[in-house]
Image (cartoon, rainbow, N blue to C red; front, top):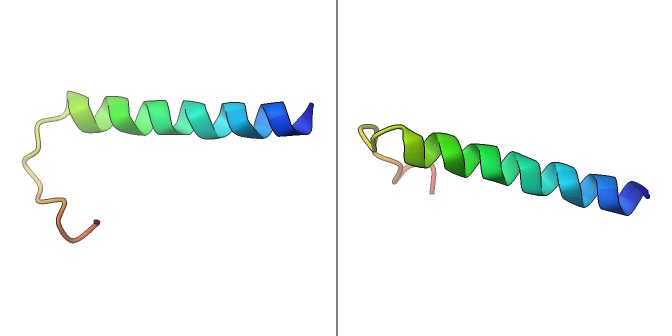
Length: 34
């Protein structure tokens, strides 16, 4: 159960991150972050 919850949290976090990243226009250079 814990493994499933952990993976679910990771996936949900990634989905939210990508959603926000793609939703907002790439105005800020993300070269420093990567």
